[in-house]
Image 1 (cartoon, rainbow, N blue to C red):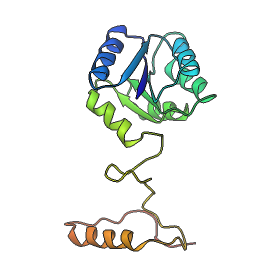
Image 2: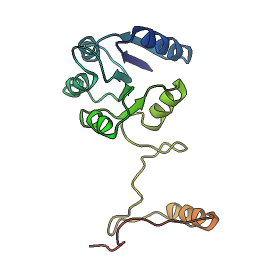
Image 3: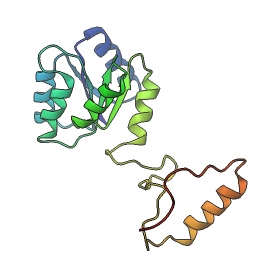
Image 4: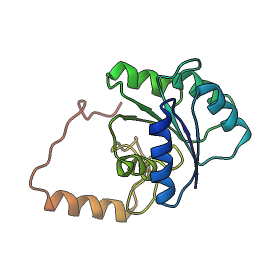
Length: 167
């Protein structure tokens, strides 16, 4: 797997690169948004990690620029933790958002949960669907049996949501 880190704090970028390389990843690091967008356009990467707050082209702006030509998974990395900041990053096209300080394990867990931008089951790799069954959508026997077992073994079952009526 090849990862591009775009982070203006050179020490952080180089430390993160060293840690990820130690885990067996091929990693490149650049230190501004404009260069990051250029690398993303000319290189082939499996994951981009973009800092949000950078001088010049911000991480969010770089993300929007990258989304014009690529669907590579993007994780935004920032010290900002307000919901509005997260929403802005996701609206810019990011697949996930990680606040500083963070651990490499946390970063890799995000990647494992969302390797191609599509939520997947950690155990079987199948695409995760919302816990909603659309009107007349069939369920296979294995899904029903697994649900019955899970409910039967639960200590507490909470049903939350709308009126549960189908329109």
